[in-house]
Structure formats: C-alpha cells, structure tokens
Amino acid sequence: MSPRPMSSRASQRVKSPGALAVLVGLAGLLLAACAPAGSPMPSRGTLDPPAPRLQPAPQAQRAPLSPDPNMPLSGGLTPYGQTGYGSIGGRGDMVRVGLLVPLSGPAAPVGQGILNAAQMAAFDVADERFVLQPYDTRGTPAGAAAAARAALGQGARVLLGPVFSGGTRAAAPVAASAGVNLVAFTTDPAVAGGNVFVMGFLVREQVARMVQFAMGEGRTRFGALAPDETYGRVATQALRQQVAARGVALVDSRVYAADAADVRGPAQALRGAEAILIPDTGDGLRAAVNALAYVDIDADRVRYMGTMLWDDPRLWRESALAGGVFPAPPRNTVQGFAAKYQDAFGTAPPDLASLGYDAVALAAVLARVPGGPRFDRAMLTDAAGFSGVAGIFRFRPDGTVERGLSVMEIQADGNVLEVAPAPIGFTGGSAGF
Image (cartoon, rainbow, N blue to C red; front, side):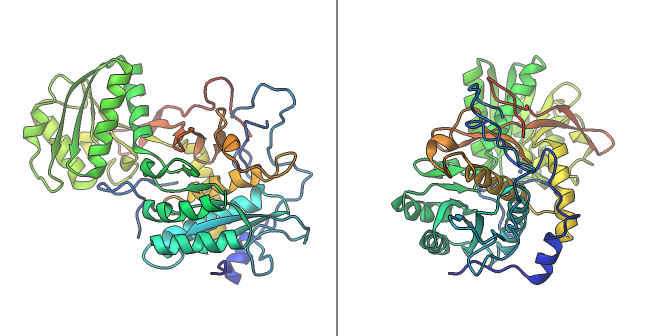
C-alpha cells in the first residue's frame, strides 16, 4: 500500500505562504519533557468518531521545543519522492511518521480532513527531515492492519491513527511486534494500553470537567438523565465515578428509550438534584429538557450539563437549554485553526481535524528532541503534557488522554459564552509554545 499522493490543486493551496503562515500559539506543541470548529464527539450510541478537538519541566537544561525561526520548516506538503510528504532538502536520516486514516469508503471525508490538518501541522512545525506518510485504512480493521504493516515496512517510527476502535485493535499488535507506539484518534478508552495511546475526546474527561465546574458553583447534589444506549451508559457511569471520588451526592440516574417522546417519568426521579447530566443531542435532548421543565426541574434553579454533543449551534436555539453548560476545547485556538484550514482548503474543517493537526505537531516536536527522535513511552507520558490547537493534553500511563477543557454556557439568544476558560497547564507548571 503506497502513501496517497496529494492532488496538485491541494498542493498549490497548501504551499501558499499566505494560507499557512506559522500560527503564533498554534504552530507547535511544547514538549514538557524537554522544555474544531464543531463537535468532535460521535453521535450518541457509540464511542467511536462518526464515519460520514505545558508546561516546561523544572530542569534548567530542558529547553522549549517551539518552532525555531532559524530552522527551515518542512515542505511537509511537498511530495517527497513517492513515500510521503516531507523534506525538500533531500537530507538523509529522514524521520518517517505513518498516518493511518480512511481515505476511501464511507469514512473517507473524516480521513481526508485529518490528513489535510496533518499536512498543515507538518508545514507549520516540522523540520526538513520529517516525512509524513499517509496510508488508507479503508475504515476497516483489516485495512488498518494492512496500513500499519505498510507504514512499518517503509520505515515509520511512530503510527498516528487509526480513527476507529476496531482498526486500532487490529493495528496495535502489528505496531507492537515492531516495537512502535501508536497514537489513535478513537474515543474508546478500552483500546488504550501497552503501545496504544488514545488521543480522542474521552467522555469521562468531559463529565469530569462538568462536575468540577458545578462543584465550583457550590453544587453538591448530582443526577443523570441519559439515553439507554452505549454513549449514555458510559457518561452516566463516569458521573457515578466522579461523584464517588469527589465525595458529593448522586440523587439518582435514570435512562429513557432513544426514541422516547415522553421522558416525564424518569425526570421525576431527579427532584432534589442541583446539577443534571444529559448526555444526548437532537430530539432526545429536547425531550429530556422539556420533561425536566414539565416536572418543575428547570434551568433557572438546576444546572443542566452536557457533553461535547452539545457543541452544535442548532441546539442552542432550544429555549429550555438556556443556562445549560457543556465542555469544549479552547475556543480561540480552535477557531484560529478552523480559519487557517478554511483558507488552505476552501472548506470548514470536519470533525477530528484538530486531532490530526495536534498528533502530527506532537510527532514533529518529538522528532526534534536533542540526541535523536524519541517516540517512546517515557516521552509520550511525561506528566507535564503538551499544548496544541485543541488545548493542553497529556497521556496517562494507561494510554488514555487527559485534557484541559473550557466550559461554555448556552445563552437565551441562541449563542454561547465561555464561563470557565480551559487551563493553560497541568499541576506543577504552565503551558506554552
């Protein structure tokens, strides 16, 4: 399987200096060990993305790995022979990074969006030795395994992707047999561990941010009203874990059928809650909030809490949701990324594109570690973390990701307002580029 060549039109757009000038605050990740627009979450009922978003360590000798203005940027979007996008200088000792995404099949738009953003990051952050090699997974486990074998056969030092949990499970042992780590875009934490690091926006991280915010308002009695599907059950379980860990009360948690028009029965059980998690979207979310209002549990007194499923302007016009809050990546960096993507490719970035940018920026920084490229576990799991267009993040030893998210509040006029900013660093330091 050969890496997919870029069309001449895309190449011309991306290589335009005006289109992709290095972004201040976006154009690189700070490796702490050495120194979308739109919802990225899946539709309810699944933990995978849809098919159709630091701090320096204290040692003085550890210098930030922000892009060096004196270091030539990668031509990362210029074809390097037939093996990928990378060096324009022809230097030896190339650092090859495999990108495993669906470029054909039903999920091709998602994969192409990730690839576009990945190319942006290579242009913005990488040096001339960096080679980004994309491979088509076809959106299937077998395709992901074949893509991993092809990438490793062509010298990839780390694998970015696949997008789906099934493909991640199939590619992981292929990478492990070569001693290579894999950073996947899936939101399923069950595939993390060993040589697999999960970069997607995890439901439990979103719920944790909501509980933290509500407790900051003095709320100590929580509830959940969720669809009786995988996504709703995972979110509810995350709420139970957060409540138990933080020593606050769970009034009750109730589920409703995904197609239920009347949710008043389950809603009744949540009387007395001061904050209610509703991990749903569309008609299900409307039915839930209307049922809560009908039984006198309204947003004037009770804080409705969502997940990143709520990051949808079509929902913000629902009057019953006014005052509700949901987690999101930092608006300023995500919107800046979206504007640059639009300028480069003539369209808004699709879901997960920001993760493609951050993953390649991470790999580009690790490729420039003094002493040689480092994609090992110790570097990936440094406790200080990294900063990207989707905010700060760090990988835990179990391979799952921890993120810094902002809190957005839905306003009565159908807009949203940031009521709690995303943190700029994890405990023990500050983030930066």
